[in-house]
Length: 247
Ligand code: NDP
Image (cartoon, rainbow, N blue to C red; front, side, top):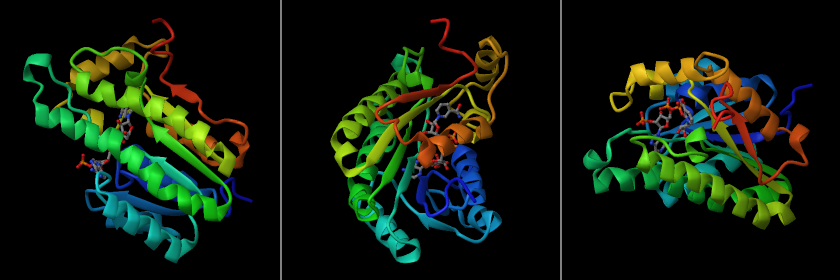
């Protein structure tokens, strides 16, 4: 028996990185999974196999969310797991931070999470149960040099998670946030807007002395998506090699 048997999950930003890792594990545990992304994720879905479908999706667009939820219902039934994982990170000194880029962080990392919850909850109400996992960051728990736009959104995700948990508890829908430390993904390793040497340095400076792997976040997300976490809602779950323990 799988830990996610009978679950229908939507994972945003699932074409690569941590989203693809979550999808792989969810499928192995018996879920039906829709991965969505602004980039093409057809190959990822094919590789992940049966019970996985890719849908093109811009998380900043309400109509995209409505289409994704309706099509998921048609394919697999009402949604009972949502992982709001899609995100961007552009690390900039204050002087170089443009208004457009600040707004882009807001639209994708914050507004996208809000829209996802609002549009998906009616489907979860049909299912009679739901778990929403919002991916924040340890950047949502402390100040970060050169990271005002990203950090603002990740704090917001943490706050929205608590509000949603209070509002949705009566529908048997749980909402929690996950706060990864530095993880080896395209966002950290192949991103021209993130200094790779700084990433390595951050990894080495945590108590475990290394960067994390996507599976180390996936295992936490899996727990929150499953009924094993049935009494947890409105909570923050950190996996960061101890990075912020010393703050
Ligand atoms: P990746 O960049 O590898 O994957 C994120 C995916 O989301 C990309 O495919 C990206 O596409 C996509 N995306 C961007 N904008 C949109 C949009 N408007 N609609 C739909 N999809 C979109 O990132 P990670 O796997 O590293 O990160 C996943 C989550 O974890 C993010 O929320 C991130 O902030 C968070 N996180 C990551 C950490 C890390 O160290 N990697 C640490 C802490 C938190 P595109 O290529 O176009 O950007």
